[in-house]
Amino acid sequence: MSAASIWEISIKRGIGKLTFRHDVVQAVQSNGFETLDINPEHAELAGSLPLHHSDPFDRMLIAQTKINDLVLLSLDRKMLPYGVPLLGIE
Image (cartoon, rainbow, N blue to C red; front, side):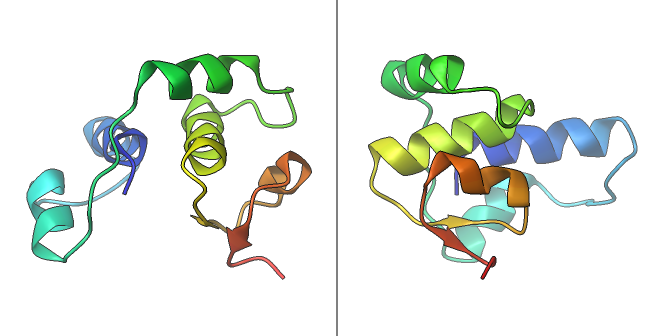
């Protein structure tokens, strides 16, 4: 799980858009997920992607998917133009 997702969950919880009372990092780890840090290469690519999607967290996930040769779990159709492998959209 990307550090960007943990960051976004924490922000949404803080502004009341998400109810999740547990420690996010602890929940991720206790459910067997590995975490993916954000590195400078991820940041550079996320900032230079075409603006098909304006959400900075999703742009980071796209960059991490490309650089780390991953499959992205998402139902967001705005991810499709980036050509990353998606699980959840057919």
